[in-house]
Structures are given as structure tokens and as C-alpha cells.
Length: 386
Ligand code: ACO
Image (cartoon, rainbow, N blue to C red):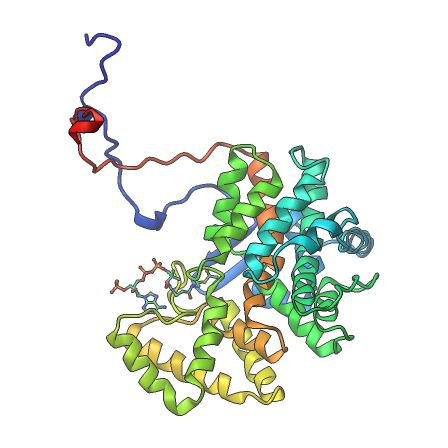
């Protein structure tokens, strides 16, 4: 037997389990929140088409957190609590206005969520009741933070949310400073519904990994915000519209794609780890983008998108994902490009919270292995001999 202070030779130690780069196909937990099968997306058993056509975002949040659709009085009470939590707490005003305003709004969102956690006496309590209260606060406030940030950086005072109005109504109101049309509220609400959850996507997984250490909801949501920001995940919607604005007109799409293919550059808004035949959310958003870009006088955005879609399918076998048409929808609604991903976060926070709550209720810490492929058997060299 080896003496106790001698490590075993490394050849006996490395983990030899199967490697799944990017965890493709790995089932990491059970969940009853949402499911993807073929081209179908279900939230708690309801198809996304059914919910987008009939529900409100507030109803969907209730569904994701409590597992069933609310009765009328339950929804009224839930909306009352959610809407009451929309304003930022007064103690946040001082430091909120002291933060830099020339940063990406996702970084600002990240910082403000951290700041809010410092003022929340329940921040590190992880029982069900406190966790639901914090989920309500976070879901109610992310849109308020995003719109306030935009107004402050534009030299305007942030607006207070109007009581008794939905999260979608208030987002458009607090951003633009005028009452939105019922049609735009409905379209924006549908976007919030479409983005609310998506099984074990990268940001939901981040949230679950962080909460699996029994860290609090704020830390878990901050981990998720950081993950969503990347251009391979939620950040793609901004890149799509920047790409369309760079292409400028339908006649230039083919040359743009020829060059992207030659340079082996990714075309943002295409491809998906799970959907291979089509993303049901993109289909709904495509119809909305077609109508809204026409109404906003920028129909070429949709025409360019359709040509991109046609060639990406024919030549690369890749489908548009949720980020492809959402950018054109937001652009047509007059929303600045760098707010697209924060809007995604303002909706997906509902799904993150559902995942965090589910993780706490059936927790085991996530701790995969890595297979070591680095050097072995090195001896420590004194600093002057290196
Ligand atoms: N443009 C060009 N080629 C692509 C694209 C794309 N958008 N997406 C995938 N491919 C190619 C890859 O280069 C790869 O080719 P190869 O086998 O010759 O190397 C092949 O298709 C397989 O792609 P992977 O990168 O292995 O797919 P993966 O499942 O790892 O990644 C992802 C999925 C990240 C969505 C990827 O398709 C991508 O980067 N798309 C662009 C960014 C984007 O739109 N992200 C938003 C996704 S939806 C969301 O998160 C909300």
C-alpha cells in the first residue's frame, strides 16, 4: 500500500466516462415545466401556439410557477402582486443613477439585479414562500430596469409603471413615454409568452447549476443573465438586426451570404441544438414580423429575412430560431437594438424562476467530470531554473 502522503499515479485516476461536448443529448434532470419534441414546444402540457393565441404573459407566468392555469380570482390576485412589485424600491434610486450609462444594457441589468439583492432581506432565504416572493419581484422588475436604463441614458427621467396595467403595456409605456396601442401591447405580450421558457436551454441550466449549490435566487438569475447575453444564445437577436441593417436591401442578400459562407462565418439567428425541422416560436414571430415591418414602413427587413431563410435551408439545412424574427418585430415596434436581449431576459426570468423553484424542491448539486488531457509526472522547478 502507498504511504499516505503519496498521490496515486495519474494513469489510474482520470475519468473515462463518455464525453458529450456541449452536453449534447445529456439528460441532466427531470422537469415538468416545458418540453420540446420535434417541432412542438409545450409549457406545462400546453402548446406554445395555444398559449400565444389565447393567454396573457401573466397567466403564463402563473402556469410556469404553479403548474396549472389560474382561475379568474387567482389570476387577479397574482396580477395584483406582480404589478405592485413593478416599481423599483426607493432605496435603489441613489445607486441606480450612479451607475454608468454607456455600457451594454445586459451588463447594467446584471449589476442592478445584484444591487437589488443587497436591499432584499430575503435574498438568501431559499424556502418556497420566500423564493416565490423573490421570483415575483424579479419578474416584475426586470422590464422596469431595462426601460429606466434607456431613459436615463437618453437624458430622460424614468417613468413609474402605471398601476393596473400589464407588464407588456408598462414596458412599452415606460420605454416610449406614451400609451401604447392595444395591438402593439398584444404583439409584445405574445413575444413575452414565446420567450418565457424553453426546457434546459443554456441560461436555465446556468440558473439550475447555481441554485443546485443552494445559492439564492438572485445569484441564480444573475448567472442566467450572464449566460443569456452571449451571441450564441439570447444575444443573437441583436446580431440579426445589425446584420439586416448592414445588408440594407434584398438585392444584397445573396452577396452577403456568399461571403459569409466563403469565410465560414455563422449567420446569426439560424441553427438550434434541439430543433432540426423548425422552431415553432420562429413561425409565430415570422407572421408577426411580416405584418409589423409592413406597418412600420420597413418591409425590406422581412423580405431580406425570407431570402436568408430560403438559402440557409437549401444550402446549410439550418432553420431560423426564435432570435431570427424577434429582432425585426422589436425593431418595427421602435425598440433600440441593444434592448432586444434585455427584453428576452425580462420574459425568460419567469422560466428561470420556475427552474430554480423546481431545482430547490428536488435538489442534487450538479457536478460533472472533465477528462484530464494535460501533462503528467512534472516535478516542481525552483523559480530560477524555469
Ligand atoms: N450559421 C452557419 N453555420 C452554422 C450555424 C449558423 N448560424 N449554426 C450552426 N452552423 C453549422 C456549424 O458551423 C456546424 O458546422 P460543421 O459541422 O461544419 O462544423 C454545424 O452547423 C453544426 O452546428 P453546431 O455549432 O455544432 O451546433 P450547436 O448545436 O453546437 O450550436 C447554435 C447551436 C449555438 C444555436 C448554433 O447553431 C449557432 O451558433 N447559431 C447562431 C447563433 C444563434 O442564432 N443563437 C441563438 C440560438 S436560439 C437561443 O439560444 C435563444
